[in-house]
Image 1 (cartoon, rainbow, N blue to C red):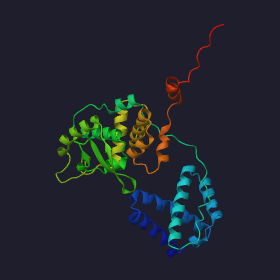
Image 2: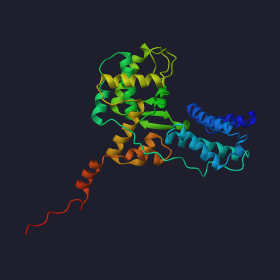
Image 3: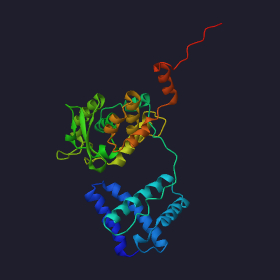
Image 4: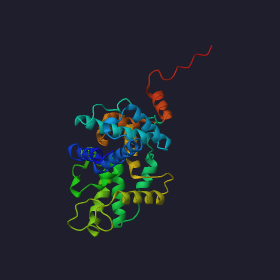
Length: 304
């Protein structure tokens, strides 16, 4: 494709960033996926976006599959292409959206992992009283207490936590704000961290959580600290920041069965995203059924 056609990707990314206000990382992922489609077009001498039809898109999907991409990755690439062509249609640069009728190969439904309540309690029972330990304890408690995404945690400023109301204001996907409750253990850990924070952070630093250099802590650093504490606390599975969010959602649903409420707390735009957390152990469900359903257990027959 010539430079004029390639420039539509740049226009689309600006549209995502400025009009739809998507996060920089999301825009970066869209660009990467569209550049893969562009490479396919160049390999197949397709000179304009309008030259693509549904057969080309199916061939693109098959090419991705042959190159070892997972079904999930192909689904993401097709979704990016579908959104891109919707934009081109809006701008009257193409006449049809060739991706609409193309389905990605289905992938097995992968359930998110989680830590049970006992192992989570063991992980959060962090000993010590140094500024770094106090910071780590507060970060881990807040991740689990409020079900935050990693980026939501690292983006927090000091004023985002209201200790009196026991809430935290976070900015989620699409720059949407939401207010989430904070539990008493997290509030206690945050109070301890605030006392230690001046030992690491300069007076003018707004970030709630800072590195040992006094600047806003990075997501990579949080991942490393979570992994470190999991090993130190003897947790026998791989632990990463998003696992706290999975555990938060699973434990709330097991206790409340309020799917809509958990959707709001997680900041999911669609209820279908939250439904993946409804995977309760079947034996646990069977026990609930046996205990609560009026006709769950057959009455024993009278002996003849």
